[in-house]
Image: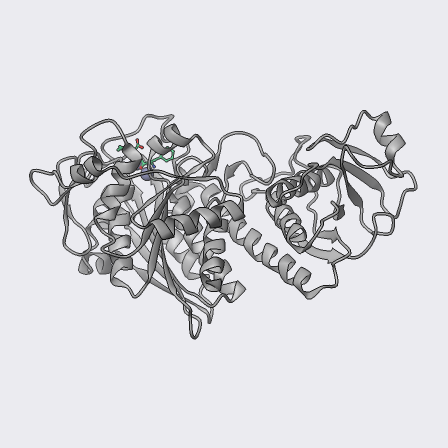
Length: 485
Ligand code: BES
Ligand code: ZN
Ligand code: ZN
């Protein structure tokens, strides 16, 4: 675990294995300028050059890091992660980061970038990594150099960054875990293990789910050898200013069911529980931060498998609350489990509902792999979520639910609701229109994270390979914003 602190040390006095020294192209000459020029370092944003400190300061190695000329929180988060990883590659156990933060918010961004950038998933590695870009050492101590280190607002900001980064990294771990090792009962147990005196956890097994009328979870889980679970996590401080419900899609593996996916189409489908991972991780962070807002998370866990007991296209499921759904495509399973979770959230005392789901491939087609789709039934909540996402640095874009798509959802000839779009267009909006049927009158926002939940490429900025933990930071920021309003 990487421990981050703030320190008033100067680059020349900081004690660490590696000093990461931020340089701007418009910087005046520094002590190390000659050495930098010699290795072709220009200070361009994101550029790194690692060299022996050669007597400079109290460190063994210096990593020069090109900083943005106009820093923003997001640019600093990314820069801190890049610098941290370069120090990691240089074998550092302790790192001093001199990125010249101009205020407490910038210290916070740097600390968050460090916590997120230090992430590695090596659960299944049995031997030390011999690849060049994956060092064996783990950085366990990071000092963020800043003249504001002694201010209480600085230590609070660094602590917050640590809480948030640990929550994001927990979500990443779950998403990266092999799907056979995190089937619904195991995932439910892992969530139950998070219970504390501030965090109440209730797990509904398949018997309880049937009794409670959660036909979406039962129907989606019917093809699997292991039963579905619904997990409710509650953080209820005294005198909360408001109550937020979070609902997460937790398909621990999405084979498509009988409407089976192609081999390549299911390659990454262990990530189909990223929404559940995000809402659970967010609640743990909100509780640790002690925010004055009540939050209940509903994790809807099922494994979508084909078998003789699987739900068929043409079957009719009765979801929580009694609404019947005609199933057309068993690969559109997320909306079925979310229907149960959203109905429960709608019955609860929550004032607002936000769900998070790797729901539609159509959203990735519309917005690309890095942007979350935002839909819902309430303009104020939409704007609040957009503002939180912006502050968190998680690209998010609002999409509509056009009237005719909303109408198509209720066009089933044999049931109340039609699961699947009769037309091949607007898949993300159709899925959201379906979900809207289960939220009643409450303000509700839906985050479709099918693209950003998973990074297929290589590590970039603070974004790890594989599970990214997306949406955790937006949700925590939203809870903070709602707490303050
Ligand atoms: N889990 C998938 C959505 C998905 C696709 C997530 C790609 C991440 C990356 C979801 O359950 C699904 O299969 N959706 C179908 C819906 C369709 C059958 C209406 C899709 O998007 O193709
Ligand atoms: Zn699916
Ligand atoms: Zn799915």
